[in-house]
Length: 161
Image (tube, rainbow, N blue to C red; front, side):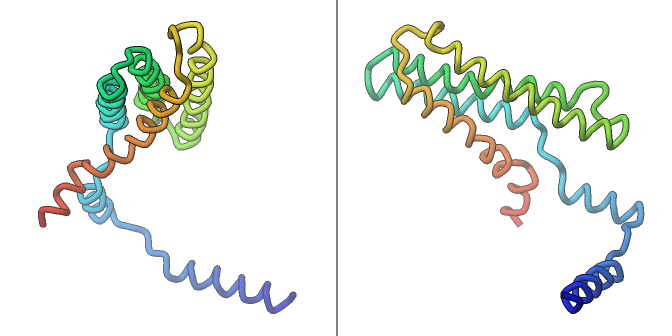
């Protein structure tokens, strides 16, 4: 047991000696190289993908209720994501690190509660609801967040070089 504790201490000491804080210029350069992706860009990407899924469900099957079900699944992702993005970009979002972390968790909980509430309300709002179509719309729209990251300006710039 003592050798394990000693090894952990040695690793911690090694990490401390390797850590070098960035200067203001280095931090500015790092931010310029790696810009963050706007949460609104993610919401817009999810909205477009959700619309495509709903139209595809309707067009491929010819059944309007499948299109509406898939669209509702997409909406159950997009609306909570928009509420989350608004909460993160709000006035109190970056007062201090503690507030920012609390705000992130608070808005994430609001987003999840809103999504669950929308799913519970689905049978009352959509006539002839198709749960499989709704879940396809929900999952595909949820995964569309990765597309916004993949097609961010930084990624395109790195691919062009």
